[in-house]
Picture 1 (tube, helix red, strand yellow):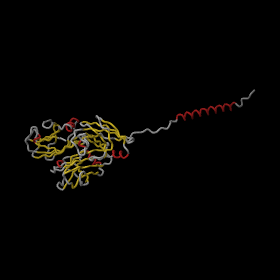
Picture 2 (cartoon, rainbow, N blue to C red; picture 1 turned 45 degrees about the horizontal axis):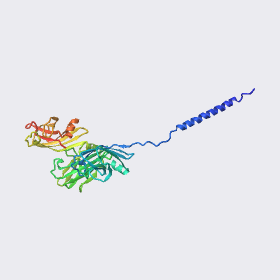
Picture 3 (cartoon, one colour; picture 1 turned 180 degrees about the vertical axis):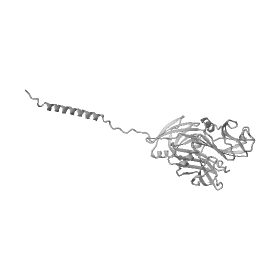
Picture 4 (cartoon, one colour; picture 1 turned 90 degrees about the vertical axis):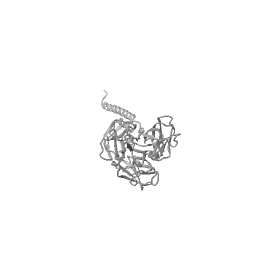
Length: 397
């Protein structure tokens, strides 16, 4: 009879072979499951950009065109692509460009865009590294040209979300407190960058020889201390950049409290002045109050001047007014067009002396529209002799 003494060894060898097959199959499966290396996905790096308004006032020099437009842009730092959507009305463009120059100055063409055939117009351009630096520094502007305005009909600076534009600010003798009586004039352009905390500016002026120039702190109708001493202009235009603003100065600037004051030997306290109003601030400067503005005219010889600042973020209207020749018994902001009478919107504190200052509560959206778009707000000063209103002034931009 044959012996089975070698059986355990055979079983062992069979088991070993079976395990080898399993290990080989497992390794093959694992190898098959290893993912093929791929390139990392391209991710966008979108820079927040502001939607800006195009107008003839933004041209340098400004023009009288009634055309308007809005520009919405996106910029991707990864692809370096600037895409745009332009809505416009009141013009028939014959060319459109992106130019390179700071606000308040004219510069060369950087990109020739497709001439819009209808509104909205869309497109995109690709920037190089140098062009990206200029774009993000606020040096690019879009210019829409027409046959009537070959040099440019409407314009807007292309800016990031952390920039604020002070565009075509009138710098006038009537903005001084009190008015200087000079015949000089000027226009201010500025750009504030929240990243650098600096104001870059250009002033165009005529009719004066400046001896000094400052940024002061004070709402329209109020005089305030010097915040920055600027380089005295030797000729027009004059450009420069401030040192970095503090957080308090930034808050005041964006609340409409900064003004430019140009001094001369004939007007040491200030010859021409302009309030730095960004897109969130509307200034009502040198509004004349008199009896002729009443409806019907009151016949009073009293006079007054109102200065106002409306903040579209807080919805508050701040004001300062002066008066002479009357003793007010009540003062109101009314709602009514020029030459018509309207109801009381805000009752103001009755002044005991001139000047008088204050602020309203927040305006409703309807009141804001009436104030900013329809020009329906007016101030009315009443007295015992003229209970219906002695002197009045319409708040017009």
